[in-house]
Length: 247
Length: 174
Image (cartoon, rainbow over all chains, first blue to last red; front, side):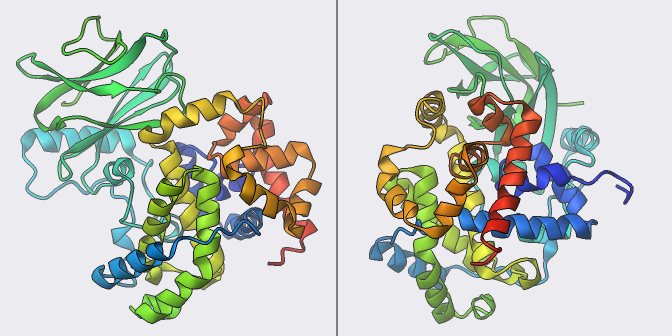
């Protein structure tokens, strides 16, 4: 990343409204880390965004206040000045990782190089350990990313061994008929196939993130097939894609 | 906010009292479901509490920071798999009723009365629509371009120019 790269001016407004894809977000965040001009622009756009919800106040119920304050009394704060805790985390795979896992991390590191290099900027814009189930995986210290393309669009499995969870990120999967759905599958070394869940609503959706069922830890590949609505016990059609999870 | 960052629960309670209606209003407008909105508003304030030390006043005021956190969180929820089906229906019908959402009519009515709202309306439909779809419907600029049937670059530009004009028209004042 050098200072001669183009500004991201045309995306700052959309970024201020969270109206960007994850890829664009990272692109903007990378740029903001070393561009004072765009940071100033973002500050202005963020202030303008605040105006959009002016006068829309809705008083939350008193019970909510009570439960927030009660939760706060139990919840420790993150100490100041620990940016590491919120910066994602490419190279950092789990200590004590075993052989195959290290292999995966290496692939993932190559594939995702440059994608997650969020520095100081992320602390402000992207606060928090307290993330949704999908973001928890995507931003996990030990997140590993496996990507392929289907019909020109990326299909990505992001897996975290620490969380025992994987997320599938799809973008614009081709439409299927009304009585069909996409279903994910895990395939292990012995060729045994288990369902990773039905992806309702994934067809045609932008940057769709779905938590997959099961633990990818022992699996060799992820596959996607088109199944009758409601899903199948075992795949009934040929997979539309197979994504190996190991080197 | 600074006091909150030192673990001062009383300061946090004051912060909550000041900001909760604004945060909750935004969340309700985005999620259009009261039960879910209450859950998300609670998550937002816990996140604010836990991360208060990362608040940096040189990057914006406390309201701006809090709403940034709140919006991101609510949009994250909208984009999550659980909400997808609801969103799809919503998406389908956007062409027919882009600006009118019955469940938030009450909010809308009050909003209409506001001067800032007048400035938003003043932007004219092209910019106003793009901003509303992006901010309140959790759409990416790409989805905005599809919903409004305009080129991708145009959606981005309308969002950008809409925000900047809004800022100019209100003098950037809060």
